[in-house]
Image 1 (cartoon, rainbow, N blue to C red):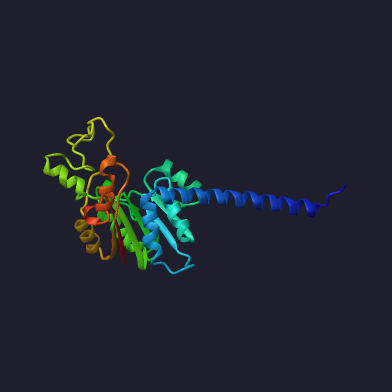
Image 2: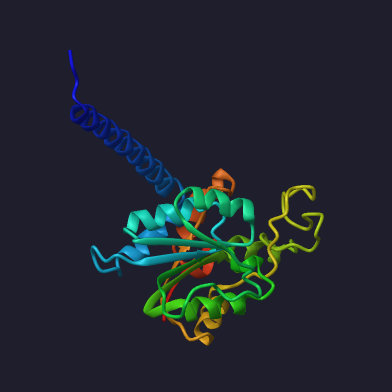
Amino acid sequence: MHISANSYNSSERMRKIVKFNKQRQNEDNNNLILEKSNPRASASISLLRKRLVPQYNFKIVELGCGKGSILLTIAQSLGAKEIYGVDVNEEALEEAQAKGIKVAKVDLNKDPLPFPSNFFDIVLMQEVIEHLTNPDNAIEEAYRTLKPKGYFLISTPNLAWWVNRLALLFGYQPYWTECSTRFNVGKFRRNATEPLSGNLRLYTLKALQELVSIHGFNIVSAKGLTYDNVPFIFRKLDQLLSKKPSLSQIILLLAQK
């Protein structure tokens, strides 16, 4: 039986299309799982989706993107046209690039972003600002590279988390803070040898809002988040109190240029 070249090529094209669709489906399923399992990703998507024009192809960048998993989830869920990420970690950037993200190595403490002014529609900076020695540089660059009316979405641990308020009342070091570069000391039910997070600067909701406003942004919305990292008997209380951003474990702040 003779099979023509055209028939073979058509079959091969069909096979590739089916394979590609399966890969996309797997990626979509993975992103959906991450969106549901990560409160920060799902809350970010919810805040931004309410304000984006439907079917509007936009550019998005994350400052401190790491391996890019959360960035990709947020960007694809919102329908971003172009996805960018910057970080100082070259190995993480390689993994992000393998996911299709356009990457650049940047030290947010001192480097300008390698993008023109008024370039992005959305700038993300999620749980990064607390690690910076010079957060003003990163915020200034976020403002510069955003288009007018573009959105800046930032998240960070809350120094005034209700648990931290109780910790201070009883003489303990607030969680998320660090007194040593080697030991995790002074915290209730926390072993001194437990890993450090590397946080340098912590913010209350008021401080974060004021800092972002000083750099020219208009505050749009604030949302409180929590993770399942508190004892089970306090988890429901933490979820309830974290609905108020000033008391929450994690602050998610949306601002506009």
